[in-house]
Image (cartoon, rainbow, N blue to C red; front, side):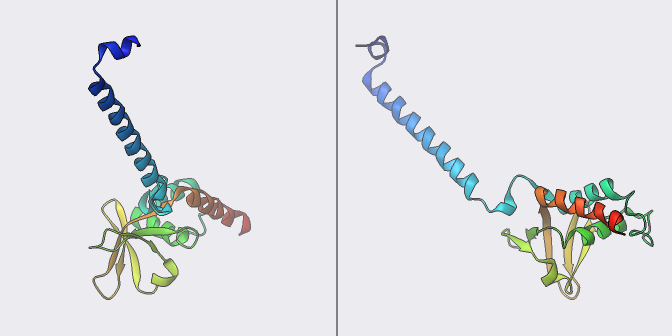
Length: 158
């Protein structure tokens, strides 16, 4: 008999064993939930507003002639231009209220029906002739990096 078993009654040892099993099971379920989430809900998603800001910060000096004609004093106009420049290069996901389900916002499918607008510190897609809208628009960081590199190549190719 070990010193551990002599100090604690058998019922406490059994309860401790089952508690350990239960905690392990919750850990496994948590990992399974994390792995089962769709890719567009991943932790590395960036809100479209932040993505446009980042693209602007990294390329504004290089894209002077492409942004010519924009009202440079209106940051909203510049950010919306960057959203339009990024949208064909990245996968955008978001929600259509009142649904909380995250879906892929297809720029090709919605280009003729929706306009991107800035509301507060986020970008939403509002339907031109109706009440439809997309909110919580975001992009994958890995795609954003590639898209910004593509925007930087515009200068080299122009």
